[in-house]
Image (cartoon, rainbow, N blue to C red; front, side, top):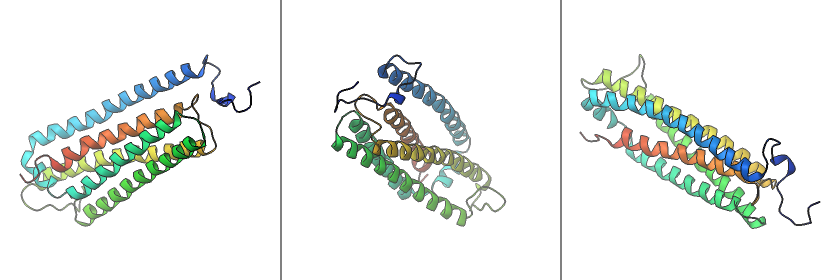
Length: 224
């Protein structure tokens, strides 16, 4: 029987097919890296399609990109970088014991989810503006000048790429909220904090995807 005050992960945290928590943590981390590798292939394929069409229609894609609000994109970039910082603090806190570390863990996770929600709210506002301006692909699409058709292709790729990113971010917010709720109940400590670390890996991946999307969609060819 464990002595009083000894840090011990809940018995149910160790799955029966693992020898110890260290082995379970390593397997969980490896599984997340494998999943992220498939996500890299997924987003890499989509970005390759975008890059090819940008080479085919450079003038039209530059003209279409000029209708994006770079200030909104920049603000969202800062928001996501801030969320990566709070997630890093959460992972750091999860590797320590004590009530103070638990409070910092819960607070950092809550701030991460909040910043992710702010990003989605800003993106929704941007989507609404594009819809009102007639820049949503479809029968009502309107674009001035001679580049209407390839510009519509640009916006098709824009909504697909940013929409997929937003979906991944929304999933991440849900996962972070669940992990935060479990952390508030004292489920994580120095010995058992794997879910926090693999959630952090996923969150940082989603942030890195945006770091690629922002310059490719908003900055490349701007003003050309």
